[in-house]
Length: 312
Image 1 (cartoon, rainbow, N blue to C red):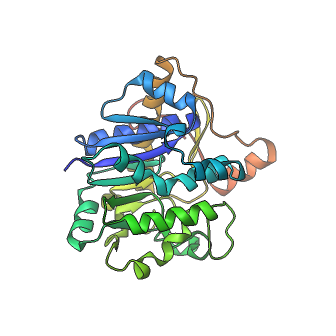
Image 2: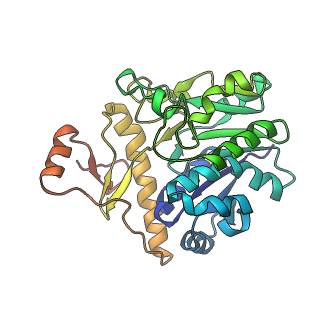
């Protein structure tokens, strides 16, 4: 069965999206990646690059009247979250051969084959898989941001319809960035899925397969199938901001360095294609920068000048 993945991003996240695509080609080369382009700049750039096994979607092609109606009430990020529950349907509606569609966050990256995750789902007989944040104890925030992370979410055609449609209705009604106790964006709605959809939803058996900076200190690198580069942002042509979470040395060497290499390759490809790659976040200056660096010395890193070479 050909795996179908779908992600969404705008032109500001083009390097991250290309890094995700590179990792999929390495670890699941027979799959198809669908990309919902949140602006015309992203669509034009990706059309120019003509990436293998990629299918592009324009936002205006997939928006429903209900989505268009609520769009002005959401920020760009909130509208991306609102769209997430609809992404699997976008593929199912356009490709009758797609039996399973997996939503991926654009800042996700594969370190290995996703086969263990799909096998876990298939053995359970469920129609969807969700992954817990599995926070390291000092960073536990399930109460605010949800038990589960919207990052790697497979849905089986037909069998998962009730799950997706309820989630779509919820996000149309409310999908905002400020937690209100019972809700946060598109994410906290997942909290009751294992009880509400007991037979249809599988909670991944090994949370170490899907890692991020909030749980890196809990798991070994060798366990990771995916890594979620939460809050990593390009701040200049030579530097990235990796966020404030402490990172084990093994993750620095074996996760962040290779990812930065993919990001640099992505920027080079975009530049060669005549695409202007802007910075994603303004770097801090003055006292704020000094305080930032004092709290976490590894916050800003240079691009690797050679494979796996990283200047601090």
